[in-house]
Image (tube, rainbow, N blue to C red; front, top):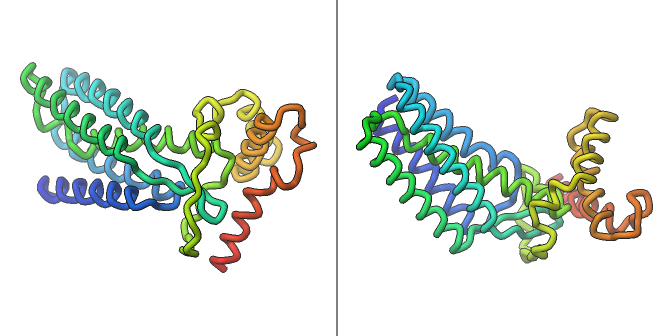
Length: 239
């Protein structure tokens, strides 16, 4: 595959992702994970073809860490919403601003590395953007888990219902990394070996934390099962 074609594919994919997310889209694992994986694969393929030196790899690692950091920061600027009981995401003006700054910093790092002797062709644009999208996906995924709402299925029927905001307190990263939630999810995983069951337990533990004085076993059905009921409505719509 020629270099211009690879660049065109990477640029087209990035533009598609940004436009789609500005309009608002369901937050599901496939659409969140596929763009960074594709771009990382294209970038690594291009990197291997150029046989990077040790100095080149040092600059690549430094640039990747910077890109990942900007991506993680960008993930905190995305609005999380719900529609029909499942998570949606929408880019904001701040998201675009972080994109612009990260691209400018990435270009500056490339120029500096080339000036100091690194080979210009060993830092593929697709690799840098892929790492950045990976950081965004990680932060966004953790925020989504913190809300307690289920992620959207791969196929979502547009019902015309309004997008509803999620309180900021339910989107905090530390909420998704709470020891009680992690321990509950791991215990469920060890007991059942079922990832979906472990995620459900994660959400239930978060609901318990938001309702102090009520144990996991004593949370009302309206609280524990609300996400499941809304997800069931979406599934029935799909069927």
